[in-house]
Image (cartoon, rainbow, N blue to C red):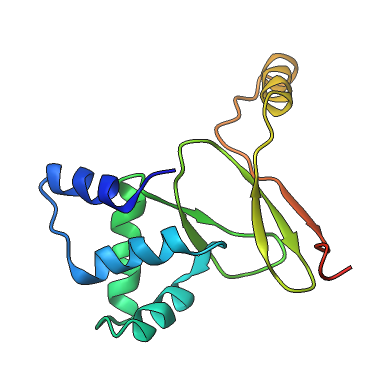
Length: 141
């Protein structure tokens, strides 16, 4: 998992400014256990008393996405787009339909095998995929 210092150092090395809003958005995304919407990010910034508006949040999200620091996620059961810090390895999500908690889960090996089979049998090159497991967590069952 990337640390705040690493991300900020990458940005500084690239000649980009570390604004209070940019730093705070990265901190919020690193310290939350679920991907946040732009509205959720804005609320978190307000709680931290970081001056920002919707335009600032969307501009920063775009900036961070373009640099591969943040990725956009849209769960099938929601219309809203959410954002999380990219953590090196591809992962999927467990979504509790009761409390709405989201947990990351990594599935190694098998999915890559299926992607190769799809390429071979269908001639379809998979560039990305999402997999969501929806159910009830232990506390909601």
